Length: 280
Image (cartoon, rainbow, N blue to C red; front, side, top):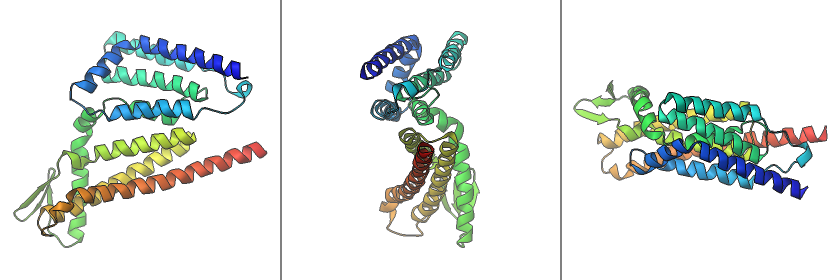
């Protein structure tokens, strides 16, 4: 049994190395994007986490009972990558298809014949996404956060209006800048959710549920953060500007704690279902 397991491991290492060679154009682009300063390097953390989970949380099922390799999925993803490369589509899309291909291979090494949703999420997060996310989602998120924050401030008796991404009260103008869009908070929340899903092998339904809950928690935390910062930046609360960074940390910390709580609840449900199936 051990020899069979080791032989399969060697085979998958060869498959992984072959795939890495096949996607070399995306790897060159990836290295360039990570080193040219146009994006941050948080993706490397997601990439490292995906590999660590793959090699440390492998399935302990009997080798004969483990599912067969889904070569149709592998070949389909490889074909998609080749088509993207041939058509010279946007490099980020090429890299995304390559990330899905690697996620499929890591899922098999992890112990399965389909995509592991958590490992797939981590591989997508390993891409240099921040610049693109900020370009496409930065302004809409800032506007939405400002809209809700201004409504909350109105409920508190403050005559605050929203113009674009500016909160205005009399002669006070508070700009909701880039960091206040919450994109970094959402990335780290997605990283947390993907890690949970991969570690506890959550189902698709559980993964979607945890992802939506985490998104809502982070969005609410960011709205509360912007609302609280208005009091600090407008001078309504004097001599408390030093609390600026701490307000963000507290709001995001609460969102993380709630996400972890629900993640553990879903993981517990998954384990209970597995035990019931074994008993049956």
